[in-house]
Amino acid sequence: MNLLVTTYIVPEYLKKLEKMFDHVRCEGMMKLGRVLTEDELIAALKDIDVILIEFDPLTRKVLDASPSLKVIASVRGGAHANVDVACATEKKIPILYCPGRNGDTVADFTLGLMIALARGIAAGHHQIMNNVITDTKTHDQNGFCAIDVNWVGQTPEKFAYLQFKGPTLAGKRLGLVGLGAIGREVAKRAVAFDMEIIAYDPFVKPELVPSFVRMSDLDGLLNNCDFISIHLPVTKDTRGLLSASKLKLMKPNAYFINTARAAVLDYDQLITMLQNNQIAGAALDVYPSEPLPPDHPLLKLNNVVLTPHIGGCSLDPYVRSYQMLVEDLENVFSGKKPVRLYNPSIYAG
Ligand SMILES: NC(=O)c1ccc[n+]([C@@H]2O[C@H](COP(=O)([O-])OP(=O)(O)OC[C@H]3O[C@@H](n4cnc5c(N)ncnc54)[C@H](O)[C@@H]3O)[C@@H](O)[C@H]2O)c1
Image (tube, protein in one colour):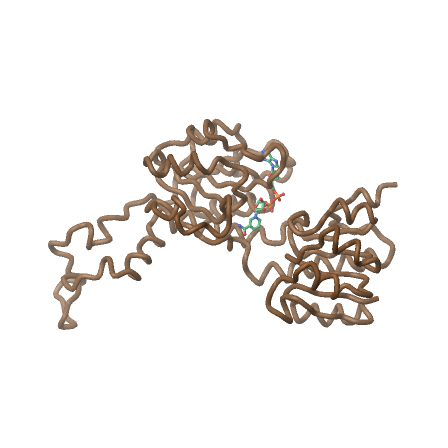
């Protein structure tokens, strides 16, 4: 059996995979430092039985040209973004995947965004880097000062301490839209910050809802929360779920955080509300088009924190992904049904 790995491989798991397979070939990320094109993937897949993949385009064209392929193993929490799931399913190729692999990673990032936004961490950094608040009057030029910092007579534009008066998290209400792998990890962290947590998720199993989370309807959540954080997948039901009329329900002092996907909300409405200070601010990791074009209206706002879709980016989730995938590859090879199968219909019957 031959394995092709096109993504980052954890060294410890490379050794395990080398024992499981006759040949392991690394291409793409580990060899070229980039995602492969369709044609490169077709060439790399010659005589390959199993592919371990992250971003490379396993399209119908690639799958049609790769008759030896028997198993797709994706290190991602979902496979549809770069794998033609319908085509793989038609060909009876199981797609193994890694749900919840980066719940804690995105949750850390979400809390980071909340604090960076509300407390001016990102804006303060930006001010220092751009010399906006550099002012000799705030320094003791002689290395000695009778009081610890000389802030006498400073005006707000030079004196950051007068500008950033955002809320402390303790005692504030956090609304989580989606209480899946990431939403629940955010809740765990937020409760440690003494936040009150409410969530909207009609589909979460009751036994998975932490005791400190109160469930709500969407309107009630939007109406009543100080921080609102989105953790939804894009489905036909969630696309545009946070419509203009829903977003208008937010309080004027509310902060909005989106690390999920742009398609679940009306970005134009969100931008209008930020431009008119109808909410306190937004921290966004995902956008209708990525990267953001240089003239995008979000880039003109000072009540936002913008990151370039990096919420899930950390090496730790790879270790978890490899744990899951190695276990499920062993299941497949021993004739058992894999635990994490993206196209379960191929095992039906
Ligand atoms: N920014 C990043 O780098 C990054 C990284 C990882 C994941 N994500 C995104 O985060 C999102 C959530 O990921 P996850 O791992 O928590 O997913 P998940 O599948 O574990 O959880 C999603 C939750 O949404 C709920 N849900 C589904 N439809 C709903 C609806 N109509 N109304 C309300 N709730 C609904 C589900 O019941 C589930 O509990 C995904 O969109 C994913 O793409 C972003």
